[in-house]
Image (tube, rainbow, N blue to C red; front, side, top):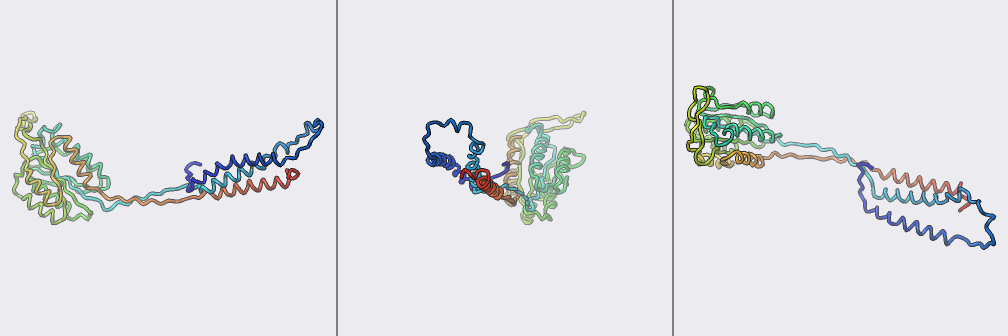
Length: 334
């Protein structure tokens, strides 16, 4: 009976009639017995035949036939479910990450850049149906990884991001970072295209005006979520590099152009967030993850295998067996 379900289980209440039927048969048999008065029945001792002892089988077959008919009425069947998942075109996302020297500040642990990489890795793993790209910027910007669905390559590229002023000029070029991200998405055919722009400072590279870049993003229908990263007040920033290659840190004011970041988000239909701690940064990426969802449709196909025919055949078999026994072995008792 494994994996069998019943369409009409209410018919099982008919089983409560079987004890009443058995009681009625017993009462009827007693009333139909003839009474014969004799001075002694010793002559009939030890003359009970096997047919007398097994006559109850006729009623048993009828009860079995009734029981399996009740099961047939309950309509047993097995169900095979096939599910086919259809995903829409999904979302193309570019994560635009500030890699300037200030991202080594230690107000987040172990520093801002490593905290961002850890949270970004979780975000990438969660976006199983979407394509993601990486753009890094400081004084200038470049595409670290084009928009791709290859999460393994993406995570490996993310892992190796680090501050290196010999590779990219230091500074905070928010406009150039946003412009590079727009170039990565403007030809995308995805139903939704999103940029997650993170910075920990103020724009100090006038080559591309961040507000003008936001207007261009709006024209292309790109949504920009902006994140300001850094605690309130002061934080230990890298001050100078020592002879051994290590940085010397000192507390300095945290300055983020929140007005600019809010304006970029507002122009493009996005949202601005402020991450002041590791925990808050995780919460922000979780919220963005919920805001930007990919539609997934699941079509389920049901294949039913009806089993009631077997029980009807079994009931007919019990009734035929009772009829055959009545007309043969137990005929003299009828």
